[in-house]
Image (cartoon, rainbow, N blue to C red; front, side, top):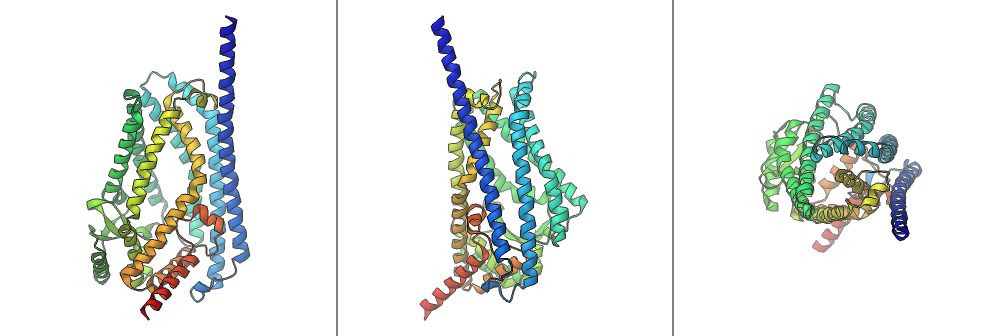
Length: 439
């Protein structure tokens, strides 16, 4: 009996040691993410303060000191708000993990309801807390910061309508995902990760297909582009690129903001080109066509397909990892949980993955910046000139008050596009090289 007690004590000590290690790993990842994020913000703001009064050479004649000063103020205000929101999110996350989670999981386990219902309540509560924590920042950004700099045009009525629609849609999508995943876990315990991965992949593809025709129209009015000359110009370029699209649409984004944009959306038969009405109002035909040529470049270079394939493969690895770890008892003990409901395990694993994923941001950002340069090259091949694209980028920078002096390390972590100065210099070098080859 003494030996049996010794074995139990040894197992308990080993279990507690493992719990402490898991907790330490999380705290290192969590604190590291917070410190790096804070450091990057300070580096970016310090560089902005140092160089913020100098108009880059490529923007001289387009942006004056007054606009540059406004750009610096907007970037600084935006950065500080994002920093406060991130810090609030960190505090809420810690409170959930160490205060709410043990109580919530403990009570749900003892409720006389199906485990799938427990999981839906569990993730519903967490989603509601996250949404409430971010709501003040959303309101301030929309009705204070964006209005201060002349961007926001949204009314309270429209904002509330968007907010309620978003809640309903998010709740439905979350319920479908959680409900299906829990059903696989309960009824296919040995292979749920595989079926969950397959379902998640199909779910994402269906959403990509349905978004342009089902979800987006709930928020905006889409109509065929009214400018016949511009439409014909775009169609000629699309045909030259060898692409098929279901149409060219303009969207009433001006009801919400004066920011400008254009994009491709959908897959298969729902693929379409969308132009903001603000873009149509502020850019020339050649500039708009060059912007769309860039977007077409992404399709021609199969960037969307490559990202989709990467997402599918990466999610498969993550599903298997979660399958191996989510039932691990020390994982629950590390955060003070006496009960081990699998939905709590899913959440805990996601917390680790989220903290760790931050440090892989530079890899993903580097890949997308490379894609952007390739798309710029394709836009040049399609249009035969870089001047409209350069003109469009300058106008976009001016109209959107884009930061012209980002810190290189900030760019490495956060920028999916090359900085504007670097991008314009790349286009100019491309044009110069092409002209030399033709001589």
